[in-house]
Length: 315
Image 1 (tube, one colour):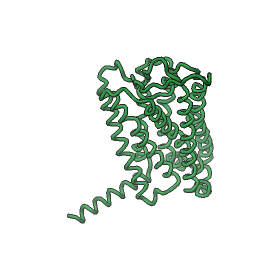
Image 2 (cartoon, helix red, strand yellow):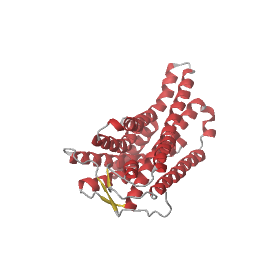
Image 3 (cartoon, rainbow, N blue to C red):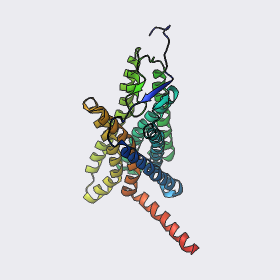
Image 4 (spheres, one colour):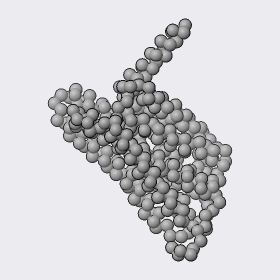
């Protein structure tokens, strides 16, 4: 790019997603319900992990981080979507748009890395049970979680930094329900090749590589389970992974479907699919852990027992 070229940055963008969809207000209400569910459920999970000493383990450090990521992600996305489309505030300033994009992709990639951390925890627990506390200590898990945050923040800052070099001299209408990287970069009128390269490299590194790692860990787990003689013991070991497998499916299936058939999907169908991929996992993840994980169930029982005892004492 010519160094003397002036970068044209618009004062605002217009987010045009969800236009032309009948009865769309019901969908906004559905998103709001999912958001409230996400806040309450993830808040309960984080509170249980903080209060119950038996849950202060490496596994639940990663679970707490996933709940935190889900709360931050939902709060960064849903209130803005409701404000933008339900209350018709479709204008967003240039700086706010980049901030919005940064947080959306930060949370999206943190979710995939966190799922990879949980698969690593299950791999060590099943294949090296006697060495689990040595390999996966609290310090190790805290370090891995911190490393994931640092790497993700650094990469997303680079992504936003490359967007600031783009000049906008055409439309300012973003064909998505948020400040999406692809539609935003396609509005530019100068060389966007580095941005197109980033849009391939970043998802490959922070979303698809973690998925590959998860698949490899479960191949190793499957091989380890096959060596267990008793079917009852195999099933017991597998149950410890069932909640995580469901989390992986809920997160990756909508993403895979959306990105593999995106070119063939109608514009509104893609926008709705992307929005569901963003809001469904935070609302469903806590339910899965409550229903599938024995430790969380026991912790909930303790809380209800204490509440019951306190109520009885007051009476």
